[in-house]
Amino acid sequence: MTDLIPTPAQARVPVRGGGTFPVRRIYCVGRNFADHAREMGAAAPASKAERGQPVFFLKPADAVVTGGAAAPDVSVPYPPATRDLHHEVELVVALGLDAPSGVLAPEDAATLVLAYGVGLDLTRRDLQAAAKAKGLPWDIGKGFDHSAPVSELVPAAQVTALASRSLTLEVNGDTRQHGSLHDLIWDVPEILHELSKLFALKAGDLVFMGTPAGVGPLLPGDAFVASLEGVVELHGRITAA
Ligand code: MN
Image (cartoon, rainbow, N blue to C red):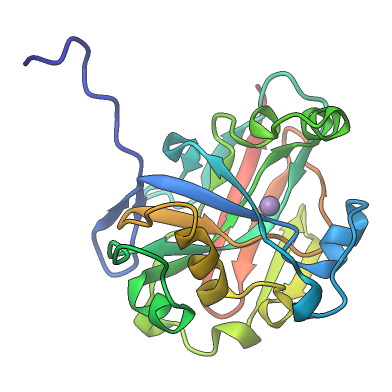
């Protein structure tokens, strides 16, 4: 059968050392740092035993925004329908293999991870807050066009001591967010384990791991630098709508 429309463009993220990562799905984790959960008015678990279930949502694959090799800075247009675009700096995990069928054991999760990066889970906070207040889905607050700027991906073999590294976001030279991955409520193997109970994880999936405290507004003209300490940075700017 002939396609009746042109094949939609495949979203891809560059990988350090060469090649690209075609994106299949973008999973996101909500409330994965206690200090951010509290700043959003949610309860933070006092211990791992009390953490319950992680909060998941998705973004469309074509929400990714990447720079090219020649011009690695990303340009993010200010989205429509909001007056409160927020930044959330996050660790990004890229899966290079399909998970085996069934639930993935946490100790087997690392074998699926191809690479790590740093990204922004951009959020139309006003729309998300309105949805939360009515018990409605978060999609329009989270899953909009250009809502997932992401750095180049760094092969996992080159990333040591992940848990001791920090995430930082600077906006116009001021530090807005800073947190250690040691403070993740659910670490990467635990999140992949939990996701595998709900979805068949596959090569091409990205996971945004949640943000530390300090989320706040971005405006047209703002320049940002997101960093995964000692691994990779994402430089970019918010442009007029
Ligand atoms: Mn987030």
